[in-house]
Amino acid sequence: MNKRRTLKTAAAGLLTGWFALKSQAQAATPSATASERFPGDPPEHKLVYQLNHADPDYIDHILNSLRAMIVKYDDNVALAVVAFGPGIHALATRPERPVAPGVRERFAGMARDYKVQLIACGNTMTALNWGPDRLIPEAKIEPVGAAALMTFQENGYAYIAW
Image (cartoon, rainbow, N blue to C red; front, side):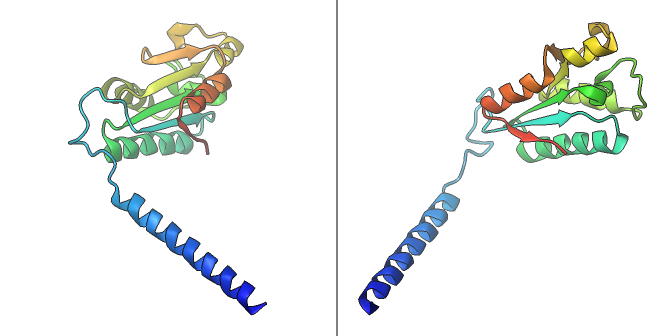
């Protein structure tokens, strides 16, 4: 019994040591820095946000998070926002729900300046009787917003919803 327990303890210690060394090696291996990446290289990081509420604080959190990701990763991150349900009003030229001043301009600026993809749900637009003219020009319409979220995830995007 003692030999068996000693062998188990030794094996556990070896595995623990191996995992610790592996973690240290991974931490010591740098990812590509901005100076190692060339313009046009695909970004290492991808993130898609779900925008499905019209609440001004909620929308502001998403905008601030987008900004933080851009500041942290510069051109080494691909960002997308999929708007559906009440959240679609944040991308509307003439929203039917209250939208804080400057929201549309902030989204449009991020799309133009940082290539943030803005996706509007076609089903939501149909339900609201909206045509493409009801969205800021930087927004693209996808037939089903939930399917767009799924496609982004299938293409390696992490998914954020709150």
